[in-house]
Image (cartoon, rainbow, N blue to C red):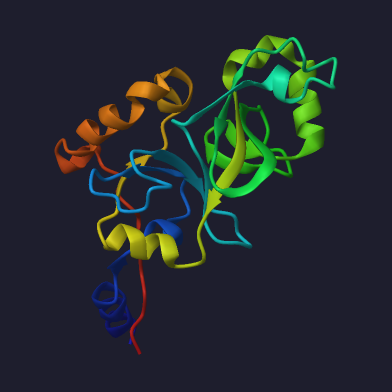
Length: 203
């Protein structure tokens, strides 16, 4: 019986999509991307447990500094961090990527000690810790997908998928990011994101 069960598990083993895996990824629009809202974009995507995939576009500067966007706040006004356009959803909302030694309750994990959040209390704490400004990025609006929609887009050939990479978020110039990552994605497949396998038992 155990041997039969093991055979069923192996037979039912299938490659998980990025939504099944749940690890944060970078979506890189393929050169023939038809959606003008995402053409030539790089999107950092996370996977909340109670909603569909969500994330922020990394390479569309909004042309404004966080200190000008929130000029009414004296603690934020001196900050010259560039704000990026994170996506078409909730364009008045502010999200941010940041490092933290422990996982904050109202933040989505990206990789290791890196998180994405839009929580006001976390934002206030980041503004008070001015020495960590170099490890913070800010986005107005965000991108999102219904459950299953993103995997369908990837399967249709709309996106390259790469592992989440802090060096891309913090060190890569937005104006060169898309071209650089398209070239990286076209290298041998070992450079591509590989979803974990999910064992499924077929009745």
